[in-house]
Image (cartoon, rainbow, N blue to C red; front, side):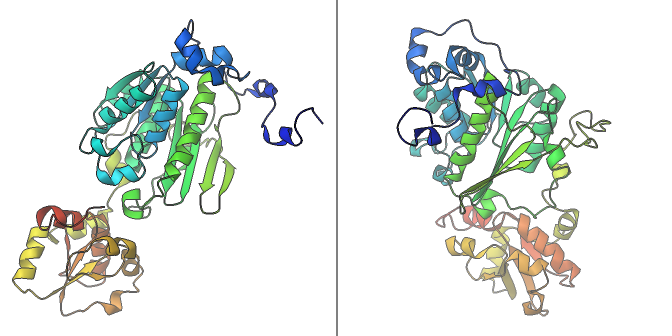
Length: 414
């Protein structure tokens, strides 16, 4: 046994020969030198043999773009800055909301209402004034994604919707850029590195987006705030490994984290030779015209069902005030119903309607009015009711959020 304190070698990690298992070359060339201030700041990196001065010079010379300054983007940006990544780009067009502060730790109470990209940049400058911050206070879209991505060596994907994820993937593949992906929901997280030149892309893992309404967003289903730190730290670790050329990156691997069980599982992901984007005979050779349409936030059936069967929150209030006879049904989950509700609403979760379980409890002689949080789930439930013979059912556009904005601002948003 090697000399040292008893058992020390068992928890000290891998020996310094880790550099011998480098599977990919460093992504960037090293900068010319480190300043005295940089040597002092990054000394704990410099004394790691596998990072050293050269690895820190590579980080200094790196240009990394983080798509999103939210739950995943917050820890990713903070630790990339602390690590000494020379240029950090932030793209986010949203503003800080109080509901963000439970998990988006790069923002504070005084930032509420401020553009997220600007708030994040201010925090980064406070963490490390040696880092150059580039703000892209705009929505990422088909027209600007190539130009924005073109200025960076590596992309860190912190998005929270499928349309942007597929666009990020497609642009990265077409430009030959590696990107580090992460995803979170409630107590579960996933992370991987997609780089088509060396392994699979996101489409190899998920060739098609899930059916509309199948996978709730964090805004609908919630997320444990600290989960963002767990997955975000994995993303930063992978970014550092790629930039400096150390260790074995998650190219071809999917890390799955279960916070309740406190387990990590690494699943092998193979490149799909039939992938429409990075396969042997690709059929997708350019960015799609409309990623929202590709991912179908709302199904065609739901879109058809809402035509002529949609009312506003103000109209719902007018119906209530006039004493109109109807049954108001809240199709959200019980936990959401406990947070805030529209007066007079009966809770029947969307799943019970789609499964048919709740249909027998719905009256045939009264009009049914459906609502959810924002209008997406109620549209899907409306389509199910229409197909079951409830021809005069309608849903509330914008859901309970519109009720709060248009009718009762004293109620809490979530």
